[in-house]
Length: 114
Image (cartoon, rainbow, N blue to C red):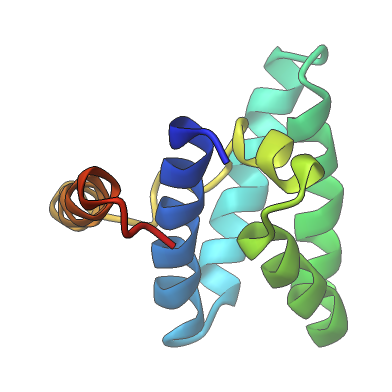
């Protein structure tokens, strides 16, 4: 996995932990609204359009929510592509994001990232 893809996955793991630590619906609704707004402004971004549909389904169904979580944490190419248009910019605080990225950098440089 390329470094930037690994970094994105690490951030999504942190996002997933925070979303699932409590009621995920407020985060999922905010992400859906964000994705819908930006998808309307950028109709060429196919990943944002897909996020809107996936988030709508995840809000409506626990099974779809689990599918969304699997996608978020996957190392498959489609998941990597989806993370390139993330609808979750509001989940992690700046401090949380910085901590995640510093730990990723430390592990990456040590050759122990997983």
